[in-house]
Image 1: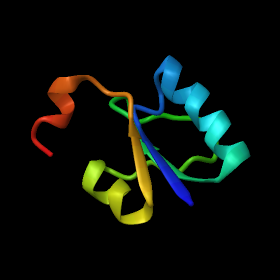
Image 2: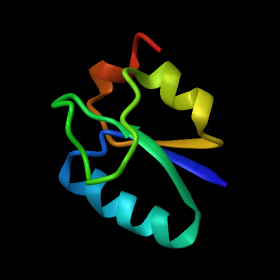
Image 3: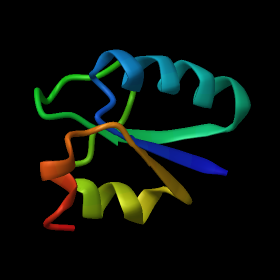
Image 4: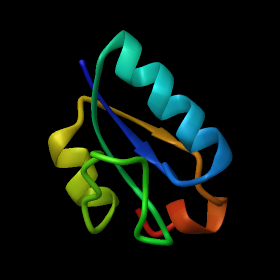
Length: 68
């Protein structure tokens, strides 16, 4: 299973990335700051992350998700 994490650069996003990498394949994540854990793919938006992930865990602000 390929897991994507929206909000990967936040405190919870980083913790989830560590756990996801241990339990499954970390597909990548999105980050408002444009940075994330070293070696993690950062697609430009949520739609692009969805294309490379089987599941997405969302740890962004609610206002970020509404348009999608």
